[in-house]
Length: 124
Image (cartoon, rainbow, N blue to C red; front, side, top):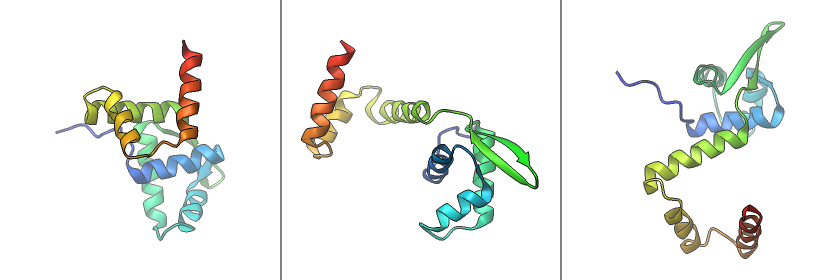
């Protein structure tokens, strides 16, 4: 039997973005915010928050009758890990083909390129 993946699904990432932005959230908080964008069941949100806790992305405490979820991992570290996994899986660990792809598909504006150049200059 294969171990459960610790990679975030699209729905889990959507929930994490809400919790990161708020700093902490209950199931009801996340449910109401997601409901503004699309139809979703309260029990689905509850299950996904529990899964994120089990995966180590959230920590849970109880306040009164509600569970409060807080990020266990910083957003920038999680995103860095997700990008690294993507580059490893799709581009065999090399970021250069990803950048070439972004440039060819015109996903980067001139302002983006200037900012990348500026950042690159700071690292030297």
